[in-house]
Length: 487
Image (cartoon, rainbow, N blue to C red; front, side):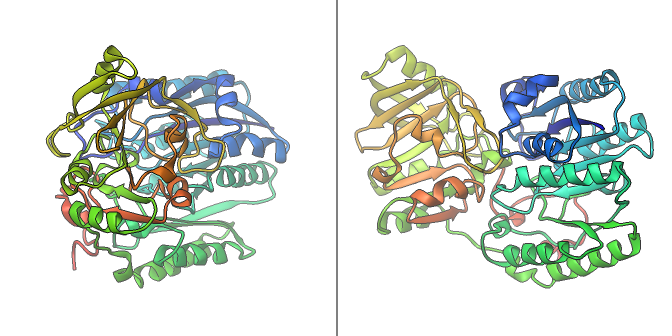
């Protein structure tokens, strides 16, 4: 049995003005053929799960391509056509195949397609034929379109946020495709989309209403005739017709029962709609609360969530920290220009910089700082533990650390890298326990890394292209009605 392995993943924020180009995939991850194995096999990612699942289920994995880029604006037509074309060509050259394990995000938008993943799935189905086994994995933040359920043999979605179960979901996909090809199961699936939106911080699966929903998903998944159950809370930073959560149930040969169970789970979610809303403190209130709390407090900069398409250079929290006179804080900013200024000055030299706020006018103004350059780094680090996104090898580009007279450490990097790994700061010799406040450019995803070293985590309602609640955006293509936007 020979099963192809491929991935093409991007979470596209339609409110971002920065398009995602081929270069951003090259800077993120773009491996062809066997080159993807050393990068992904040991990663806590579904592609790693595909590869180890091949060994567990006794089939040969045929690596084709793996592409991913840091979330940003829609993917350019050039980048999309190049990567999809390379996947198709790789499959043609792979020799006889019995199936395909495919990792898509589910919230990719391109310049030409509101559902880039649905388009990819359609092209692959047309090329491979109506009966060719394809098992699809999707991110928990997928805006699941009908094509993502109608066209694959089975669809599997992460169950944790932060996403720490990706490798396990990949192994689940490998088991499903092996049993399908061997004729042991006959997957059929159904989807139901409850008409609501889940506030980004309520999508946390560690506690609260989404934890209850995922517990019910796990319970239903143990039913003998059920092959897989998924719930995707969706990605409301993409204004697309398929925006909104989805329940997907994969049954063994019984589409009617799959549909009935999907509807029951959808009703289960709908019944919790009020608990799935939230109200967060603004920057001033959050900084005051953090300053008064003992120990190290992490502030989640929701409006500049790099993992959701934020630019990484919002300055609202830094400006508030300086305004309130809090000392010994840590702030990480994307600012290639400032990094180059630090490199020109050199380690131990004093620099006067205006940092952040340079991508656009939605994420604050540049903030003046003065301090000594404490370190210049190549910005590469490795994460050995299961963390959101599943990546093992990270690269934030040339990076500098500036220590200000207030005792703040300002980390400036040249590539936008979401704060999913604490090694982003540990690799720079920074000890979290010495910081009063740490800011992380995310909403919930950084919790897996930051909670263990924080006495408290506070999500903050900052402005930006990933502002915390859907009420802060104007939509033109979304479905209606969706609670709480349409009451």
